[in-house]
Image (cartoon, rainbow, N blue to C red; front, side, top):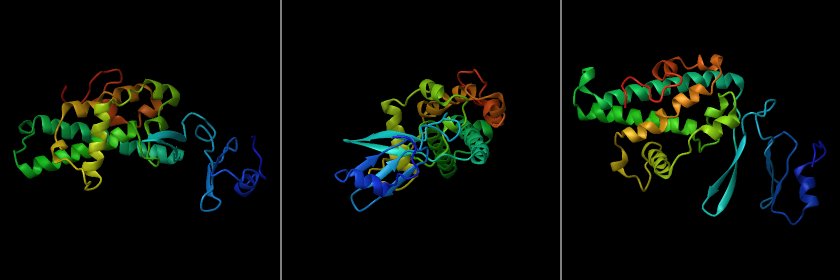
Length: 236
């Protein structure tokens, strides 16, 4: 159905009295409304950001036997610009903490257990944030698609997480976000393979940016040459 300002959730419920969930579109206005305790009416708004259509604002996620529609938050241009500083800082700290974990004595560090555990946790936090940036599960986070020149091309090109990487993403959530019942302390370890989950995607991300937006990430562009395969203070 096309845009119709007189179309309301109540009228849709009246038109389809036997439906428990009503999904409609072409309004370009996101909506999620519960008409009563059992009937919900939802419009995803649009496939992309308002005015550009370049970045998906909704997605479907398979959860066991259910297909769940997730309505993505769309940041303002100001939020996107401000968020670049945070992404750049996350990349910088990921690389620097990894450098310490590889070569602690090279930087004048001691073998103090508490210091090493603190830096290990710091690295894991930055790793988790950046995996979420490239492969978001939450709907209210900044995503790589918000920055690239062509979101569709980026989503096609960016490597999908394999099963092992998906397990690692889940383990990082359990280790760092809360004290999960199934938390496994053995998974809180330094791993070059885990580190590469992010570092192999950063050069690809930078290559998909316009030159103007690439300038928003000075630390990342310094640590990862635009067309390089590795990057960082020390080669992996």
